[in-house]
Every structure is written in C-alpha cells, then in structure tokens.
Image (cartoon, rainbow, N blue to C red; front, side, top):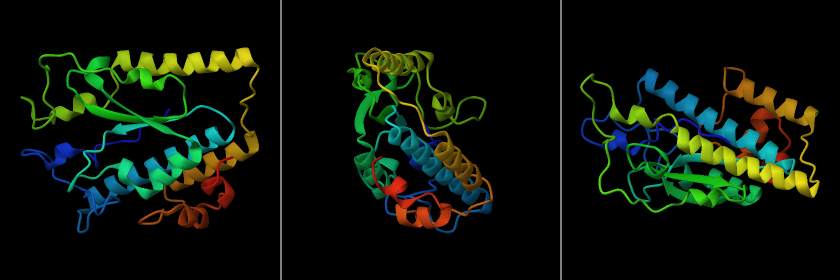
Length: 231
C-alpha cells in the first residue's frame, strides 16, 4: 500500500489562511515561479509519487496485491489532483486498478476528508460507507491556537482505517494461500527497481519535469515493457 505525500496537492492551500497553492489543475507537476524551498517540496513529492507507482507496478507485475491512496479529486479548476494525471490513468489501466471513494470520518478521522484508493485488492470497496455524522469535530482549513495548520492532523491514517486496510489485504493473502496461488517477486528485478527508485528520490536521477512513461524509461533504464505493459 502506498500513500504519497499530499500536502503540495491539498485543496486547503487554496482556502483563506492556507499556505498558498503550489500546483494548479493545468500545471499539476508544479506551478511556475516558486521559491527554491517550495520547488524542492514539489520535486520531492513528484519523485515519491512516481517511485510509489513504480514499486507498486513491480508488485502487480508479479501477480501481487497493491493499493495507492490520495485525497479525492475535487474535479474542477483550479484544484490539482493525482487522479487527473494522464500518467496515473494509464498506470491504473495497465495495472488493473479500480478506484474506491470514501470518507475517512467513518474510519476514525475527526473530519470528513474525502479520499480515494485505487487498488486490485478484493474487498477494498468495503471502505465506501455513507457518512452518518450530524457534525464533525474538526475543520481542516486555517490554523489552530498554536499557529499550526489544522490539516496536519490528517497526515497520518486513523488507527481504525489502518486496521481496515490491513484486514482486507490479509483476507486476500489468506484466500490466495488457500487456492495455492504463487505471488513471489523476481528478486533480481525487484532489486533493480528499488535501486533505481533510491537513486531517483535522491540526486542520482533527475526526474523529467512533466514525466511520461517513455521519459521515465529513458531516465531510469527500467525496461519499457515493465513501465508500459502489464506483466
């Protein structure tokens, strides 16, 4: 399971009192004319997102289970979303991933926090439970009494959500074990993917400004049939 950092994508950045947007819907990989500090934040987030997709693809290629979580797409300008990226849509299609939309308030969060998980794990749709709350205890925009952004409280999953995701994976593993399914990764290939990702998330490889699978293949050296085609 992967949950790439969402702080640079957050709609809270557009709210009064927010830290200000670093991306827009028409420039999702990063806005122009950012400060050096903000540029580093966006670049790091971009590398982590792509690295997460690559390692999950390696798992799916082996016949394994994988899922990726991020805030739900607001679906309109000017808000950016990883779910609107052509790179993401192509990756989902090739990996056989299906999106599930849910509210984290039903899994222990003090605010609704609309969320999406894309996954090939049977049962992950159990997360989709209608909100039955009459009010929520926490607002996510603005700052609290200590001057910290309120959205920080949702950076970590609630315990109840962690348990639910884990239980769905465990049930799938047990089902595979009962059927005698073999989901062992190719160690040599996985080592190559992990080494490449380690390089990409430091200074060893400069990721393309607007990545495509073709440009990633040229940059990383990971075979094109891995990046583009389902295993």
